[in-house]
Length: 181
Image 1 (tube, one colour):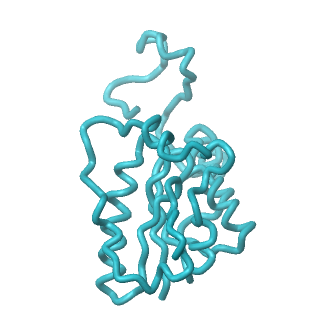
Image 2 (cartoon, rainbow, N blue to C red; image 1 turned 30 degrees about the vertical axis):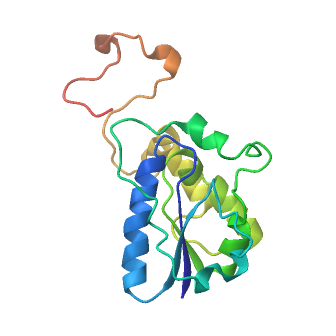
């Protein structure tokens, strides 16, 4: 089976995504699949992209470990000066269309908010995980909580706050300790 493990991107969870993707890639490869670990943002710029699944390449060779600090997203963006015209890196859509399925190993905003899933739906690309609407709704924790409550699913007491409200004293939030943020 031809499988793209899609990882990377330009969220602060880029490194986590790449390390997750590396583990998924290795597991699928060990099961005999034709697998490629592909960075959704940097893509694959080589001219031989049409034969990418036939290559005997360790696609994880450049993946490092998760670092203590968030990745420098501006430095990643600088690797692709054209990124404002198209989020997807070179040949990402083409390669994903060649695959039998794309394993979504993306984390953070562009990997979990349904945008990539919606684009894949339009391009007829098969992928793992939730579809675009479920992804978009789940990404917004406040909306998710309201939906659970409306469906009668018990949820712990909680509040939603905006950045403008972050200075509110804890005593005024109506919450008590211990709590989860």
